[in-house]
Amino acid sequence: MAISGTQQRVDVTEAAASLVRELTVQHGPLMFHQSGGCCDGSAPMCFPVGMFLIGEGDVLLGNLDVGLADSVEVYMSQSQFEYWKYTHLTIDVVPGRGAGFSVEGPTGMRFLIRSRMLDDAELAYFGLATPAS
Image 1 (tube, one colour):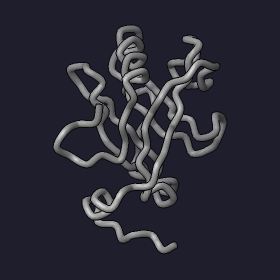
Image 2 (image 1 turned 90 degrees about the horizontal axis):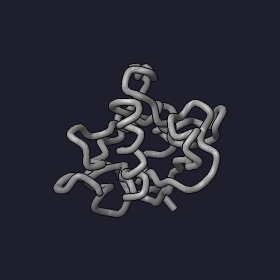
Image 3 (image 1 turned 120 degrees about the vertical axis):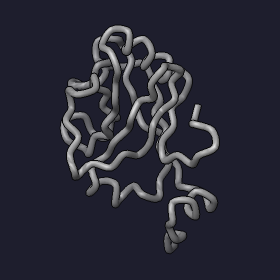
């Protein structure tokens, strides 16, 4: 479900997009912040817009098209981004206990990140050199 015509650092599976649509009905517009390892490991945390304050130290990874009027923004801290800048992230959902602070917690599902290295075209698009082996 990536936005066509642009390179994205982040994407969403249809299953995760479906849960985001359901949660939007309950909580209003949502956003994600990729956790840096505290509390819930490296889970993508989903919050109502405005409930998690984005600061100058956060990087916008992209906007997810989940089939709603507005896209869903995905952020990560700048310091964590330095470690993940060569990585494409996909937000997925699996059965299990959701993160303590993330809105999917009570649903019996939890968001998780699937990752892969950026391909050569994506590296070029983002102005990154191929990482040294």
